[in-house]
Length: 419
Image 1 (cartoon, rainbow, N blue to C red):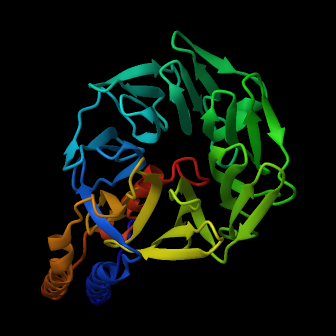
Image 2 (cartoon, rainbow, N blue to C red; image 1 turned 60 degrees about the horizontal axis):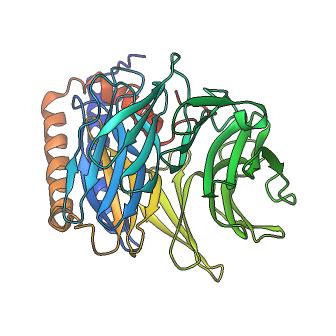
Image 3 (cartoon, rainbow, N blue to C red; image 1 turned 90 degrees about the horizontal axis):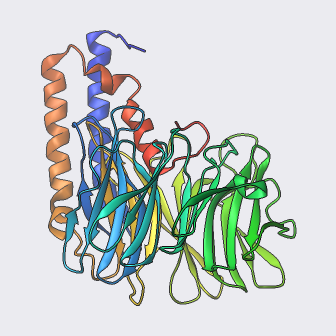
């Protein structure tokens, strides 16, 4: 909807926007704590497009992939970057693809799988190049992929609100087959072995847990810890070490973020005080877990939670640009590195971003050191220009800011209200 106003009102809005810009970027420098550093930023497409990385995998210390894309809902295209142990490089994907990458799975450095959230295809990396492994005729939701080997790959297609997509499919190395029954409601999964796979499923009434024993998918009771909760991710590390994260039901907004753990005999839960959109889980390498979340409502920050082996839960707050979001998190195998994928809003659109926790990510130290100065200078220029014009700001800034919804769709595909 077009917004009109007097020259005075527009000038006030311009001043407010300049102050918001200064606050948002300077606050980022002070609030990206807990050892997290901005490592990579990229922008894809035209300046007003929202870019983001939805998935990140780290099969080795010298092999990390982040995948995502730009401009969902419009002329979008996927994107990928690769860390080789010393630098990040953009990497080509097969030509002619649209949409963006929503999830990825990496059983080995030369065996990585990824799915487009809404464009109906699966990709495979064989150590040399990316290729299209499967195209579906219809463009519907593909919410997750879990691969154990080149001949054992699961793909899932259900939204967190239970909206049905392409359902569940399995690849045996020769052909793809649709899996009927309860499996069709699976949103994401995590595999210990080919005969020990755990999954979170979704219905309009809430989520539930499933398990695959090599023959069939079966419902798993969770001892009342996740009644009617919306479940976002599962992390299976051993038969007696399974984690699930989600949100409890709420009458308005996001419910409390809840973690539930299975020790092989019973489920116990950790109920947090955060009312935030839950994201993904990753091991910390020391018996604990990492969890990502994003503020709901009008807040603009992202959260990274760490639950230690002894049960201590701590949070880091991440702010970047005019508002940031994190989607996936990966712990580097045989390293202490942890990687975050996501993006942040800028004055014109949105940039894809990767953050790191550790020493190998080559954080953008120089950029961070001068960021506050650049922010103040940009804010001063914006205020001066607004006072001089006294006419109007670009309608895109005053109106809906569609790129905010675009960035949300890139980072959190499948969530209710996001298309």
